[in-house]
Picture 1 (cartoon, rainbow, N blue to C red):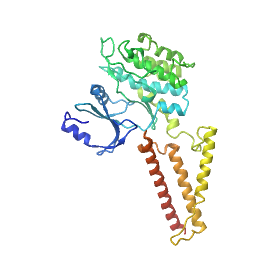
Picture 2 (cartoon, helix red, strand yellow):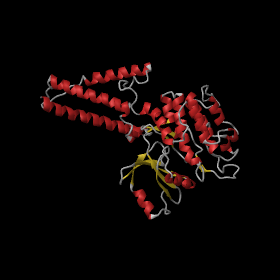
Picture 3 (cartoon, one colour):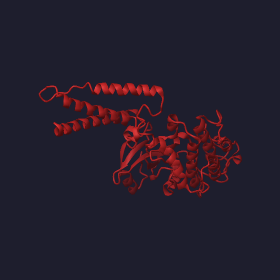
Length: 384
């Protein structure tokens, strides 16, 4: 896909990255590692007309947007290498937990912080695809806005966009040819997202009844002139409604509030005694967990082992080996279920590709069993 358009220095730059495999189902998006500094990134191919936007993101780092490491033009497309984020998108998180009004407010505040420098740039950048799938909650408790592949530069004086794009449900009317998109288009999407976080439905299906109802309604007005005119206005009302002391527009301060909220379920604030199967309190999960733990225990403690001469091991050694194997399998279960964030920074077991994940889990099981065998050998040498 790389044509003759690239300069030698750009080709050399790309050669520093080794491909680690496809990310998800998109063959144009791969995980890569920089062989010089070891940094993990995501390489993707996007349309040439996005060069101005990605160069802006690269030259103007934003704490709420993935870092852009490389942005290289070829004769057919644009190669972008950006920061790899370990975490889950908002859509995935909403399937696992209910968001409180405070949670939702924190996330919208972070998105306002993300969009502020874009909307206030000399040539304003409009995201146009702000939705739950494009908001990542990282394992470090950060909120990141991703995917600017249909973003555009605002052009004063134009009556409407050249190309109509957007995601149904989140897209404002002007994205369907009724006017040019601007900052208020992203504000419309944030109103939809706020409602979606609170009631799991779009405003046209069900409107939140809480303190954010009027804010959502103002965000999604048909006429952009009736909406919040900028993210500052929206952020101020969100802070007032949520009683968050963010009258200052200090983005680092507001990021702290959001990070505290997002860390609760992602970075170890679930009590350690809530082991896999018992974290949500759902009866069916607890029943399955009890059965699973019981089968693991019965299997481990039924193992028979023999020495080099084929004789059954003495009871003391056999008990030790059964105990170590049982513990290794319990730890493996905890690893698979991401207990206390055990596997969150390991890309292969977090891949969207099921086959890649299975390979990762199989490799992990081999490692745990190998470790169990090594521990048994060491303990037997010491104790017996």
